[in-house]
Image (tube, rainbow, N blue to C red; front, side):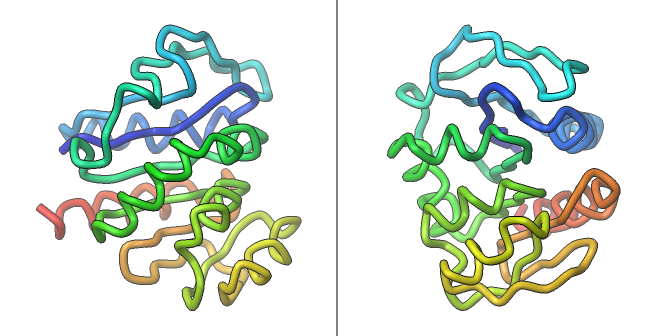
Length: 171
């Protein structure tokens, strides 16, 4: 299965790396999607530098089986790009797994895919998610239909496991 990881500069290093490795180790095809193919982006801790494999202008929601939105400051950058928002909205609308950790919930709010859903996130964006119509809870991982959310790097094992289980069920 093909999984889009949408990122830009200042992503949370472990929130990209851990789910990316779990998806790859499970035999799936993780694809790094950003604003521009070939662009080098860095994690906010400086542990990770990755190259965007596919630019947002060159992808379609039909080619992906799931979507992952790592946290950090990256979600705030990519949510201002309408094509990134459309990709998120479309994959969620196709009822494929959409997994957001930490500040990744900002993209879910921007795409208007959490209205009436239960989610979690880093506490500082709780009000943003509630204002987007979600019910916010403080839990390690929350699954509401195809939307998977977690709070922070400490939650990544549960987050990754929930993603892989949903992907297996979708297969």
